[in-house]
Each structure stands twice: as structure tokens, then as C-alpha cells.
Length: 162
Image (cartoon, rainbow, N blue to C red):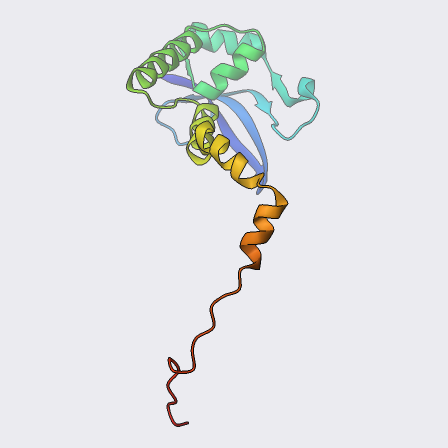
């Protein structure tokens, strides 16, 4: 039997609340629980009350070979419980980041936004060229605006007979 430490979603719609449980790996997310270890309330403003965890039982299950999910692993780290799975996740992300950089692709959300902003903004050379055009003296711009449009000749107009 393989045991996992993972979360079970509780609470109503738009108001999540999670229980941290030790469960058999083959059970569904909200299935049968071996032991309830604590809970996590992401909506709670006070960070001390956000996570309630029985550290001794969590350490017990980790010592027995339970594998925490990525989210539970982060919660355990915040509570001061180190585990080998957190280190593995850090190594996986570092490897993925290096691979993305090698291919020249953005890895984080901030990098993606920076790249999108760079594509939308015009290059600095075009800004420099556009600036003098906007700063024309008023006299020149007034001359160009005062040119009357040529009036069509009466010969050019044809009467359709209406």
C-alpha cells in the first residue's frame, strides 16, 4: 500500500478550504482517508491561522514513506518540515528552467509578460524618429492645414438627370 499526503477540497463555491490527509494513493481526491493531519484555509488573512498541521503525524507519515503532493510539500516546508520531495521539485524546476532558457523560451509568468510587452512596444529608433515629427513648429503645421482642396470643375461633373 502506497500512502500519499494530499489535500481534500472542502468548503463552498468560491470559498475553498482544504484538509491535509494521509490517503492511499489509489483513492480519489475526496475518497477514503487514512488519517487527517491538518487543514489549509487560503482565504484566511492571518497567516498563522491559515495552516493548521499536526507536525508529528506528518513527520511520522513521511518517515513511513508517504509521498506528499507538490502543494502539500510546500506547506510542509513553510511549517519547517523538510522532505526529499521538495528538493526533487526544486531540481526538476531548475532543469526545466535551464532547458527553456537554452531554447530561448520564457519560463515564468513574469518573463512571458516582459516578452509580450517588448513585442508590443515600438523599437527605440522609431520613437526617436517619431518625436521630431511631432515637434514641428506651429507655423509649418498651420501652412499645411491651410491649403484649400481643389474644387472640381463644372465640366467634370456630369448631370445624371435626376
